[in-house]
Length: 60
Image 1 (tube, rainbow, N blue to C red):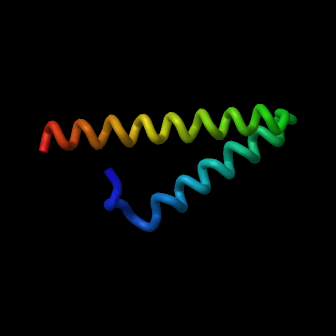
Image 2: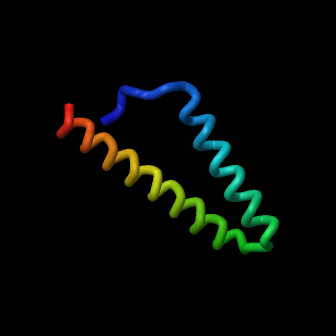
């Protein structure tokens, strides 16, 4: 579905991942736990993006 986006979006995504990693590090979460949390954040982001794009195609 690619081809659209703004330059700020990857910067925001990187900032979110950095904040999550920093927070988990401050909580002394293991590296494996941090990797799982990062994967979960990415999975949620992809799911939200997919749902929003599908609704846009149906509505538009």
